[in-house]
Amino acid sequence: MITILKADATKQQRDNLIQWFESQGLKVHISKGEFQTVLGLVGDTSRVDESLVEALEIVERVTRVTESYKAANRKFHPEDTVVEVGDVKIGGGGFAMIAGPCSVESEAQILEIARSVKASGASLLRGGAFKPRTSPYDFQGMRAEGLELLLEAKEATGMPIVTEIMNADHLPLFENVDVIQIGARNMQNFELLKAVGRTNKAILLKRGLANTLKELLMSAEYIMSEGNENVILCERGIRTFETYTRNTLDLSAIPALREKTHLPIVIDPSHATGRASLVEPMALAAAAAGADGIMIEVHNNPEQALCDGAQSLTPAQFDRLAKRVLKVREAIL
Image (cartoon, rainbow, N blue to C red; front, side, top):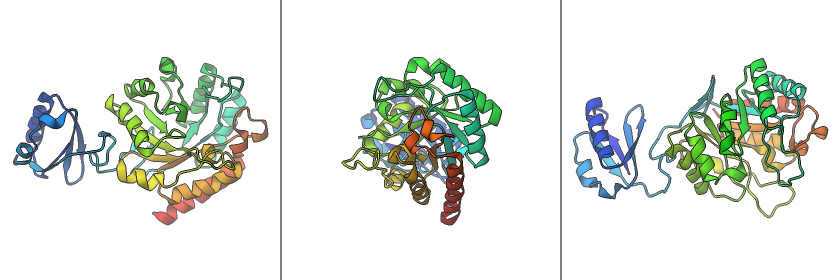
């Protein structure tokens, strides 16, 4: 249920109404726009007399929200959310290029890649320290040591870092990480979602390989219901019958999610396609479709990469991609 207040409602009137809603056992999500304030009510709203609320002098109108996700719903928050990571703004017109290797392999490797992608225009550095792999025999990442190397690269370049968490028990290790990534396999790990929801970190939430957009938004709702509204959605491809690509990139998710939610949307064409030759065209398409950012895997020697070398761009290839993506952005704005 949402309550839209009139433009001339005073702060005292608004606070009194919020206090009354909270006395009914409801959580109140406040969204202040340029011309109106929206109060989103979360909880059992069946006890609230809709006609009584709508009759109040300060209330413009009351609307029931039928969708099961509330805090992530654009009806609750009509204006785009902007997630700020240091000086980087994602959403609301802010566009982020996130780049780096699938996994951190050595100090020399992560520092070289960090410096090269920053020079090409990347604003955030990605790198895997804890790696979920289909086979238990594949490289699982450098774990805590990998996090330390990422932090070294952050100190050397000034770039905020993005890295994936696998277990809520690892949260103390992520104290200095700027953006915590929830991978596709953990999109419905609800205890992990609630744990990161109790932090004040920006959370990059990847869509599961067989999950609907509604399920993605419900996972975002788990994080937001714990108080953390700094959620970035990531489309990274879904599993279909096609075998040429690693997954099928669902570009229609960008406008579809834009209708449903206020949260920023990032596209990962590297995991979606699984082929380096397809990453640039899909990144350009994502920018043209209105994405708030792209996440690209970059490796200084893809043939020797310990993880996902086939989909990794070289620094030179990323430099070309970054320049072309910015031209697309200029054309559509």
